[in-house]
Amino acid sequence: MATLYTHADSNIRKTWLYLLFFLVFIILLGWVISYFLETYIVLWIAVIYSIIVSVSSYWYSDKIVLAMSNAKRIYKTDNPELFRLVENLAITAGLPMPKIYIINESQPNAFATGRNPEHGVIAVTKGLLGKLEKVELEGVIAHEMAHIGNKDALLQTLVVVLVGTVVILTDFFFRISFYSRGNRRNKGAGIMSLVAIILAVLAPLLANLVKLAISRKREFLADASGALLTRYPEGLARALEKISQDPAPLRVANNSTAHLFISSPFRGRESNSWLTKLFMTHPPVKERTRALRGLKV
Image 1 (cartoon, rainbow, N blue to C red):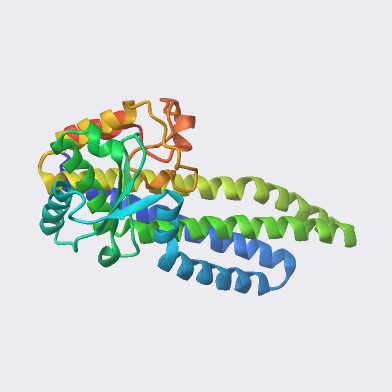
Image 2 (spheres, rainbow, N blue to C red; image 1 turned 60 degrees about the vertical axis):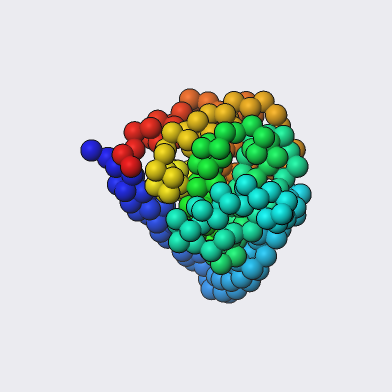
């Protein structure tokens, strides 16, 4: 029978398999470009660019996300009850006390960020504080604490960089291929152009699908880990249902930050269609609540 621990272990294995596939895909893409261009300078440029973007994202991504969300930091005197709840969960999880930010939005939602547990941040909306019961709020905070403990921010940053690298490489290959076609009208240039068109269409699409798949797996893992912290999966399950059913929009959300929130901030986009699920930033709420209610803690 599946337990909390088997769910978590399964999601960890699947996430790293997705990531391994991602890296192999980039290497294969680089090999194709190098083969046709007969030079490895493109790969070196891509590697250097990836390192620069990775380092800058690692150090500054949390500040960028908080600024984009209009989140404001609060202190213990501003909301003692919320701070006590977060402190208790941090002690239970064996994690440092994260910084707490408030987003002035009526939709109940939350996200965690920070490059490591020592720099962890939990941001919650005013709607979350006003519309959830204490056990439900505790479930949400535990979920976000799990993201910090699982170092999801670091993984998400790496995945975003990998997606960006794929998009840049394919765009570069696409442009070079047509330049070559214009200057070398031969069979090789024609084949190169055909390959470039296929890569330009499929590679970024496949890369984004892998990114979204990893994001969905991390949400399942954070649900399981959060339920382990509170020992009450029902609290988080009820919270997810309330959050998903709330009609209020989240004005600060966009496609770049949507995957960070505990539940999709966009309304009216959830569907049971398998094709729609491929492009969702989060697993369907029904699947998450079913998994939570089936856990043995």
